[in-house]
Image 1 (tube, rainbow over the protein chains, first blue to last red):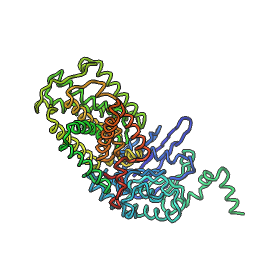
Image 2 (image 1 turned 120 degrees about the vertical axis):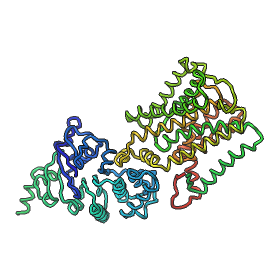
Image 3 (image 1 turned 90 degrees about the horizontal axis):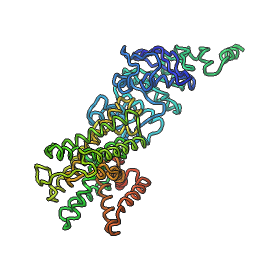
Image 4 (image 1 turned 90 degrees about the vertical axis):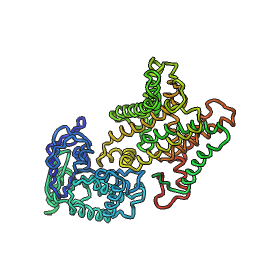
Length: 246
Length: 327
């Protein structure tokens, strides 16, 4: 569904993303992992059209969308959420979701009805009339997903949607994401919370210093020496193995 | 269409309507003349409200659209002998084009906040100087319409009651358009752009187009206000219609009344004019005093009433769960 090939992005002397490629098949939940500063969010902003890559290409359903404006990409069925949640503070929860729904509905009544339905599906029924600014972090994360879903997009890019949540909230969101996937959506998610990655993603990519250093199932990845070293430092994998054998 | 959120807002709106109705039966013509001026300025305030209130693009140069509407209409009538009705329509169009042009240029370069405010101010000032410099715009002397009262030339100033009624109708129409805008897809997009432009883009909104369109709509209202000013006074010059005073009154009314609400611009502009006029009478016409007062009221409003008078009224006897600045 999504094919990313050889993305490279430099900020001055810093190579934020270097020759990164990944694939997201339809119906999958794919994780994008990596330590802080590895270039995950930069990768996301490029895929979603917010930043231009220096080289490389992004294809969505076979169509080249490299360098396309975000609103057009959204119209083609791929939408991103933000790591730092960005609700429209002056609007109610339902109106927030409706902003997304207006992409497919041109009048207020339809958009608001769609927003209500999606809000309920995501367990936000009781909050619909509240101002978005009154939501807790967990509520705002849900709102990000609801709004993205309301655009009718089939591929959702989630940027650290679990960050800052307590374990029970993580479990709830994991359930919601699984439910949405089963309804026919595809996910690419940046995630730090391993509990979430392990239980959701079938495949994951690991980015370090802008380069893809590993790919596989989450279970394979946590045993991959290159991944362990990316997180824990050079030589850590060997020391861990020694510790296991000792 | 114009949903009110509390008994406070209902009371406020009823008071405004009662005042506007009472003007018909007030014995003194002074009140009517005064209210006519206030209504004429309300249209500029409504114009500013589209971009500044809903869209969060605070312009400090709405005189650019106002003056362009007035001048386009005046030049066509005086220099080219065009029919007043056509010229009036052209004034609205010219305002829309000027708004769209300023918007297209400013937003192409990503101007926001105070930078956008300064650029709009600069546009208004450049236009003021241009209008004072060229012969076709009457140079420093301004333009004077030939006086021919009647429907054909759109000149009704002999009949105060008719002028007042027409202005009321126009203000009501622009407010209805504002309400329609607010509850349309475009209105939701405009608020989304105000609240968070990146999130708006991610959700499929062409933010550049939304902002430029808002400027064009605002410009059409501004041009309308300018063209009305011309028909009311039959004379314009650059210092008045492109003057900073217009830009100030355009933003101060909505901010005090409640930016981003349908009734706010009317409530604010009317309130300010009443206050200014009251102070002038009380203090024997000290010149410029109304602007000193406006400044004080603006500072107080910005500090204590972030959502203006409509926001304050919304908190009095709210209708329950939807409580907010909805109006």
